[in-house]
Image 1 (cartoon, rainbow, N blue to C red):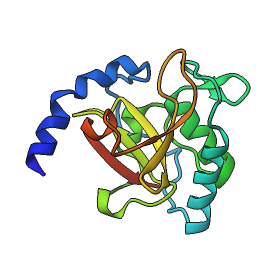
Image 2 (image 1 turned 45 degrees about the vertical axis):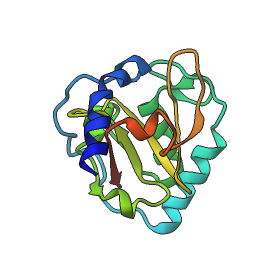
Image 3 (image 1 turned 135 degrees about the vertical axis):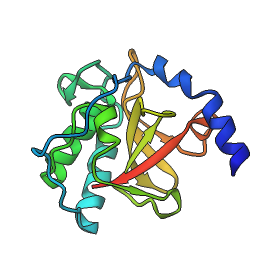
Length: 160
């Protein structure tokens, strides 16, 4: 495990090129809900996220019509599927909800990537896969956590 962590940390800076980087930000304000999602709500989040695969990427985007960046996708899906408001930046998402060990991750959990302050995020949908809006010129897609690129990135999971 320590060797994997060292590998992950060594290329964490590559995430900044994804176009979804967030500056360091203070913790989320009290305006966000902190009630835990039920299993049904978590599954609804995952299903909704899967339905948005193929939507164009747009920096700052937060609607299917206008496109999504990674945090805009997450905010739209959680609000539409579970009525939960999420922070607008990935940096703030890192302090939102509660941490979940990678071994306990479930559908609907957030997955955040980056060394000290996460710079990219997605929604875990089960079977080792997550939905995210990866970069300028791309589109919302489904990727594997154990894929060549993502398995090398420092990752944390959070449950709302």
